[in-house]
Image (tube, rainbow, N blue to C red; front, side, top):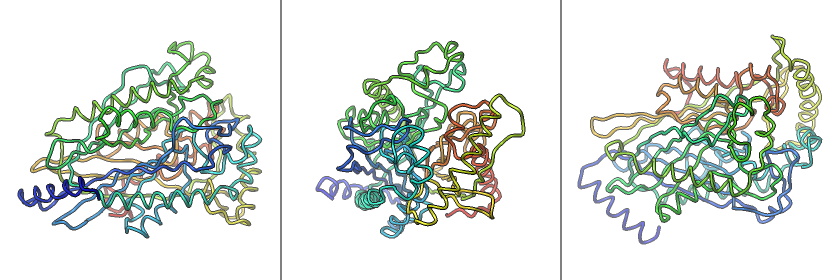
Length: 500
């Protein structure tokens, strides 16, 4: 703790004693560089053909916010939200990080959410892109890559995150919390499955002010748009537009305000870089959306635009909307997803879907499981196993965090939902409508704690396309949605097994 932090803590303590505040919250923000020294030549995950890194536009980081609930100066509970500049992180890796944090600082794993911002210009954490090349390389990676990943790099990342959390604990300061949302009306996103829908995402912020002053410490930014502003041929390391959003906040605030970005529901929502806004034409021919030619200029343009919007939104929250105490409950539901096809109804993609599913179910995953069992992978891309002699299943989880706030007689609440994949807009709207706090007070973080698939409705599977091809199982989205709604029901009936 430097001299400025010491003075800030001294005056904050005097403020608390003077006003007889016995319950309050504290917060801190953290950041650590996780770019390896040998990033040149590594595969960049997210696109096929898989490019190998030749340089970098910007470093990749782990960023986090730590929230603490205190009564009479004693720690009641901590909530830790971590965002990693990767396309995806498998559950066995996130569980490992959580275990190391628990060992070091006694923060229960259910009180930690680990999110991948989903940039397509970062390094492979899943083993699905380890071979490089085109589709044959990805198929090889699925079959043989689960035990060939760079475990040393992952262990190093976990150590860096644990060190970051330790520094965040030392920098905790009394704070107040508020949140707000705003629809971005500008045409910066497009639903690549249904362009004429003219989709609009809500930009959300969860802001924290110093308890005794009007100064913003930092905020969480949340927006649903695929971090794919850089075209598939680019071979430079980058956090894509989320990195530029954060850089804009830091620059515009003179470095006084921290920001952590969590990607919202964006499974079928792409940025508009070069495809244009003739939505009727794009409905007829979707190729320009899937093969955009965005450059780092587009990354900076969209990141700066959203960064200024997020900062304006955070600064615009009235002081009366802030709360100075919190309580939270974090609920996690772990469940198995079977490797099953969906063939109840005839569709134009029936034969293609059956062929792709058959190859995955009877060739790719069985070979991967045999080799993985023999080689004991540490951080496999899927936590898959055989159930019985014939069925393949993988386990994953959904997370629901309810935060209850107070300021005098005023009360409020917000919810944070973590889902293990790329959530389609249709399912996201259903979750917003069903979540206990309602759409305005609910923040969805996709690709959190795990990645198993694009999470799409079964009607989209029958329509075919790239997303079903790239997913573990066509029923993943339906399973995740149903298990999440079941968790909400259990919470309402007070029978949840979640950690309090």
